[in-house]
Length: 196
Image (cartoon, rainbow, N blue to C red):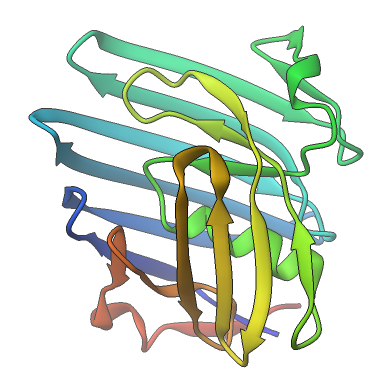
């Protein structure tokens, strides 16, 4: 499998801003570091993140820092890969069963469940996630579903938000278009390396 050295997205419609992410192999999985900045509904924020992802594409740790109208906040999340979570060192039973982290601020985190699920064409699966809000780094459980519609195309639904769309992915499994949220920046397409 190939994975880019980095990727970039331009926020669109719902917010104005940009996201840049770097990828490095780490213990058979990935270390993913990035930052996203945006203005939305008259509020501006910046979120920086460092995520470790297991070879099975489950979130194992996250270090997140966000700056918004209420100041700067930090969050540390740990997960055992079997659906148990700790937030800032404290158990988070409301996240039991979640294997993914979904950053509200990021188009990149929709990559992990697609890789982890490896759905056949026509396959559909539930993928609840620990959902980290951009403005205050609060963490909620978010029920989500993915359906493999065609090569590089997945139906996505988050019923709590009444939201459905079709996500487009490239050959490495990164979102190229997230309708109403973000579109991949074309300058990142040239940088690829093979996973060892």
